[in-house]
Length: 294
Image (cartoon, rainbow, N blue to C red; front, side, top):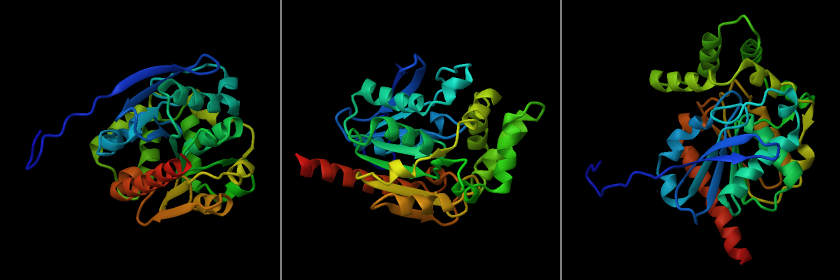
């Protein structure tokens, strides 16, 4: 379509299934120039790569190589039936490593939303930071079962997480309530319905398995980071409270902390212009570091 300007070509998407270390296949999508700075998007609990649709379809793809992935058990990725498939942090790290290798991503930026913070931390613990360009944590959490995590959860979100993993409760009604809690202002009905549909693809077993991992404390890994890190969080987030972002900024050296007012758990949907600007700033920083090291 052309409206008052040059015709903009429709982006070309590539879909690929990537085999991880234990044989689980991960569904992925890529768009943008293959030789450009790459950005790998990792969604949250009970979501899918569909969460990043607006970004993947937008102007970022004109300059960057954008790749999104469905976490194991989510979206179109394989759904292992053994609890152990979701307990081992190395498996989660291998999923990310497999996607990076499959696309030949050079110094990618990892963007982790919510539970995606755990997944990025799993990658860092088992593979280190040497192959990465930077990290963007979005409404992210990296601690589980520690004293700190008591400050990160609201009573409302805790009740919904429990309901979403228990039999005998209204699945659609629970996920609708969860997604409504994700934003400060209500999402458009069409967008809400799309996200509910994606959430319903995830079984109660998988939802529960993600919260049955042993206690996790990734501060030791995060404190050693030397690559650029940006932390974005909504001031009104009721899924992962802003205390998580504040702790990340205190632990990770040189972190850029951005708290968005009147925004909940989905900054990329609720404040897309600000989110894209912060992502571009991080990408510029990564590209500058790469140029300086040549």
